[in-house]
Image (cartoon, rainbow, N blue to C red):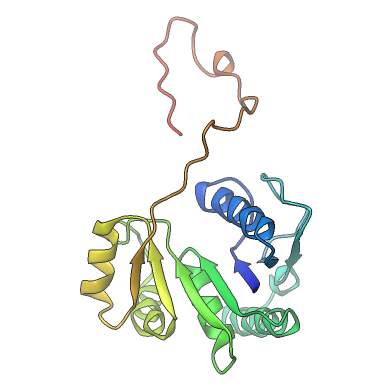
Length: 196
């Protein structure tokens, strides 16, 4: 299967880590993978499996007016989906999901929204919230991580086809050096709480 994963960038964050890990796992199963980001391919905090391709679209649109930039990004994403002959495009996070759905309209490619947030707590602009209500039902599915998020989607976006797939956890966890040494930001006798 040819699979496109679309996310704004691969810099930091849980969704970005999930995209890089999922791409590697799917590639290991024999699928063709392409990650499409708006940020340059050199800007990445997570390593990608050698079998996964990555392309950046949209950076050249930064100086454009917002509507023109959005339309150019949709057109560029659609071109990559078509060129890759994608069977499915997975949009990670709300905005990327909106782009993925818009870019796949009229194609034989299924778009799936992969939400990584608690939608009730998410602060979206009025336009983005309106678009989510109208566009998400066009997707082949909406994947969220918890049953409470699924209940929210079912009650607020009634025609959306919602599925729960919990967040994956790799055991043992990766061992990485800290980016910031705790001693550089707090006193030795301070209590430090780390969250992952």
